[in-house]
Image 1 (cartoon, rainbow over the protein chains, first blue to last red):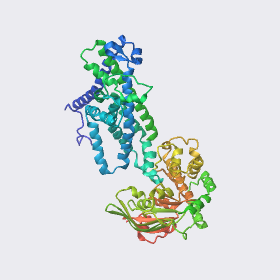
Image 2: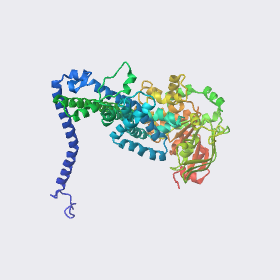
Image 3: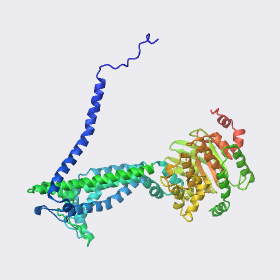
Image 4: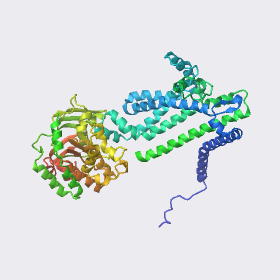
Length: 310
Length: 299
């Protein structure tokens, strides 16, 4: 029987099809691997130069030092960390509640028409170059703060942090809104069916169900604030300073130099010792470790919540 | 407006009955039909002659240009199970969602006509849908527990309605009435999402009855469940009718025949073709179209 009708033509022939397929595979792999390779080399080089630094400066002195003065070869991280911490905390206080509230509005309250206006608006906010935010902080926000009676210096951490906060609002709101929009409608129906108001459904059902996504957006936004450079370079001044715990409010009105800004300054300085230059990598490595740990934490918590909430 | 009725509801709560029935569930359907007919026969509630708890008059619903319900006149008696059956798209769910104004949540939906709940037109301008829904609970087609603990699910309605006095007790009572207590009493803190589909649906019923509503609406509550879970839900519905007015949408005619006292048959186009005692509908319907639908010769 089978000899009468020829079988279908499915035998492999040397048309090069298999070879082409293999080639596609390797080209794609190369692209995927490239980003990893670059990341790994950056980390390795960063670590190598940082180790050079730490062979000359005791790491304990570096991480506990309260003064940072390259001209005198004093490398204490804490003043720079103070600046970074202030920027992060102040911008978080501004951006996290505002971002979540905006996300709640967009996801639960806004009409389609309103959403079609607001969402692109927020995306434009995310597209503004950060140097523009920095100049805006220096030229408008600081004088405004002075007008309303706050004793801020020309360069101060408050103006810079406000602008960093505004810069990261779109990140919080857009990721949080994604999380809330993906909460199944059946849960909202259940809430309404129980006689809950819109606000009760939003706060009691939607936001808790979207908690992992909202939390991830927080962590990403914080990482962004920690790594933000241009705004603080332009508006926060260039003086490393320790936090003053005896008068916490006064801290806000002074200039600080966060870690990122210090790195820029070291890099662009005309004459800097070899040791001073390598301190840049020690600071950079520290920044990297902080944001890396934050992202790790974000993944951990998101995974834990997801088990519970999906 | 109905404070008295609510109190009388409370005082006639036959919780012991529910408990004994729950501890010895009868898996077969037939004896339960007799039981429910008995309940009807004792006439301890309004029954057929009593005032209907829900009554629609010339109710029309439109989704945009499409008319989903056409001039529905329907009176649902208190403390009985009223089933709505009919093919897909016949408007039975739409009618259900008119009762607690869940259709308000759909922008394109428009309701014309009157729908009375305990004598008050729920489409009057002064009616607050939130307050209405606190008196009329709802159970949905797919189990939709909140991503919270079992306890918090049942407590949700009590909390938003500020009925937090003796909340532990109320949660326990609701879970017992929903025949779920024995299965979950040691794991009230566990996520509701870890329960099986059938347990989740009973949890949703517990959540709905915890706040002691007057009416429970059920939108195909067993259609997403396996046969064993379905039979548990059916047993439960019949018990619930001792305390609550139950309106259930189902596409399962056998289910309607097993558990309901009254049956409304909707046919394509949003038309209520016949509404009568369930026995009458299934044994001797007036309408030829209903008979064709019931016997599967749907045309």
